[in-house]
Length: 284
Image (cartoon, rainbow, N blue to C red; front, top):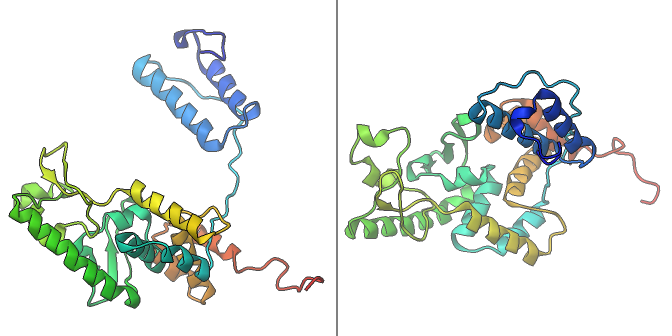
């Protein structure tokens, strides 16, 4: 409205919307995601509130989506960051790096999803709603079992106080009314405090909040003095890259990561595919 001289949206249509989107890309140099968000917002406005369907938007200059390479940590850098974490924060970082989990996949783990006998972790409804299986590192079995003992004691304490329920997916609670109290359905990384679930109105324990863990990792990155814009997701990037460096098949890495297409996994080959095909620099 401001861009078109404070005209009302009802007075404008495809031409004005297209001109504004082009202005975002050509004059304000916004990212492709920002332009797409603006388009989605305008489509929602016209279709849901103004009851008008916009036609085809032609002659719109699209913002270029730059190809961004993932931030990959060396083994020493990953261990340095993990070394500045403690408790469940440290265990979660080890899982992201050792098993290739996404942050929320780690947070949503249930007790039943970790199989210590077979040494594997089942990811339920990952990105794209898909289930997959990844490895449970041998080095993490003992600390995870110790962590689980603390979680069980917390759950039993909640039960003794009349609580101990947990959110269940896919209307499972209607099929089994006692499942929400069972040990196997509890979160592997429960929150420190109980909260009231807005749907069931029960006071129960959710999984650890991702924001608090992201803050802990950012602090650890600063303490480790890592000169890279590392984040929680950098552990997953490093997991994939280090497996490929070790000579593992890219299809295997694709399955462990849960990528739909192998071309997505191929991005991690940029680190160990040295520029110049192994040519030695004159300065060396």
